Image (cartoon, rainbow, N blue to C red; front, side, top):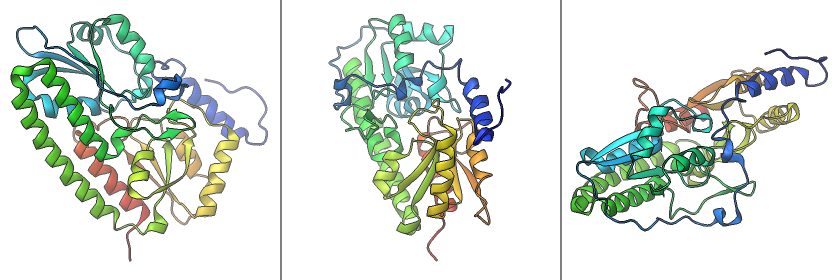
Length: 331
C-alpha cells in the first residue's frame, strides 16, 4: 500500500496509520464493538428462557471466541460437542466465519456470545444462518462499564465477572439438558474454585506494584474492567477505542507520547492478537526513557499452543506476570 502526499507536521504518523488502517479494511465484521448501540443495550443483560433440547447424543454448542469457548468447555465437559469460532490467537474484532463454521452454527442447540456488542457484525451473519437457535450472552447479569457512551464488552478481564459467566453457562446447559444438571453443576463448582484461586493469586501479585506505579498504556482500550478491579489508571491507549479496528490520528499519537512523558511511563502493553506496529512506533518516540518495554498481553483471545496462555486461567496468569514485570515491584 502506497502513501501519497507530502510529508507535513505529523506526516510520519500519517504514513504508519495509513498502512495499518488499510490492512483492516477487509476485516470489518466485528468492528461493531465501536458502534453505538441502541439505548436499551446499555442496560444489564439477562438470560433467555430456554426449554430442554430433544436430541440424541451430545448438545451441539457454539462459542464465538476462544475465551468463551474455554469457559464453556470447563462447564460442559464431555457432555457437549463444542465449536469455537474465533480461534486462539485471532482478534475477535476482525473475524469472518468459514462455511464449515456456519454449518456448525446452523446445527447448534445454543450459541454463547459475549453480549455487550463485541460481535454485533458477526451476529448478523450468525442470526441469518441460525434463526431458531438461542443466543445466550455469557455477560448476562454483569453491569457493564461505559466507555464513551458505549458498554465495554471486555468483561472477562476481571475474573470476578467470569465467575458470573460460569453461573450463566451452567444454568443454560442445565436448562437445555436437565438430565445432566448434576454434572454441569459439579463442573461449574470445580471451575469456580479454580477461579477463586486465580483471584487470590492476582491480588497477591498486584500487591507487589506500588499504587503510584499502577499506570497503564495499552494498544486499545481493553483493560478497563481489570483496571477498575485492581486500582490501575489507564493513562492512554494507542488506538483510542474499545475496538482494535479503530484508527488513531497523528494528533492522538503525539498526545499519547506527551502523556507518557508527563507520567514517566516507559512501558506499553500490546495484545497478542492485534498488530503492534503503531505501539512500537510510539515506543520509538519515548526518547526520555532509558529503557522502553513493549510487553505482550492476552486480551481478545487465548494464546497459541506452547504460549502458556492456552486457557483463560493461563492467559490471566501470563497477563499479571507481564504487568508486574513491566511496572516494577516494591523495593
